[in-house]
Length: 208
Image (cartoon, rainbow, N blue to C red):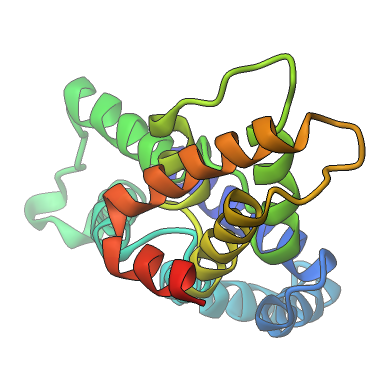
């Protein structure tokens, strides 16, 4: 059951990325649509199985998960296969995972994938700016790091760091959302959060 939730979540997130203009996700969305169009036919089932076989690699290539996430989620798929294919075990025995294993799989799925939004590029820049500059909240370094650094692509990290550096240094008028100096202070805090993850990246964007 956990594997079904994992696959559905990845497919949904990849499709949303494509719909939001992420060109790297468009081929997957189109392939999935073609498989769906075939319905419950042999060709449709085979097409879906092909998609499933490479789903974790696709999620990793688009940085929805990292290499450790691939390994952790692969264990869930392997246990699913043991449950649905009794012939994989000798003497006709059926594999029945312990309840502790099932709970562990669910914890992995939640930590590695299910609780993280599929935001990249311009969308994540908008979201980070809204969070950091919300006058009704005080952004925290761990939240900035977890949401706007650890779970975004390398190229997007540079975009976010460059944006934070520019606004921290130049005190650009935010258009009335916050006083320029306060917005600059918040962007400087975000830059410090990024520096704790990658000092070299922050050094480069500040130099720019």
